[in-house]
Length: 87
Image (cartoon, rainbow, N blue to C red):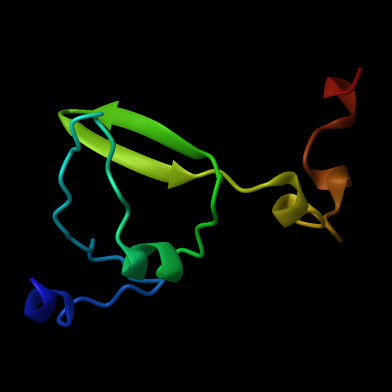
């Protein structure tokens, strides 16, 4: 399988959808391959949202509050809602 892995680009901006095979353990656990953990900068004990749709399981990293700090810095709220909508 290592020769197949070399052909994949595991960067954050890859939109084509990387594919790897994992095995479900007897305890129904799976290991996220190191290349994907590093590319997505996943950390131990990080939470993931699990979404099941049309037979496909998606794991979405949930950012920590520290990572979200400053995300809206500089945003102008005047144009987001009309004056009449405010309570």
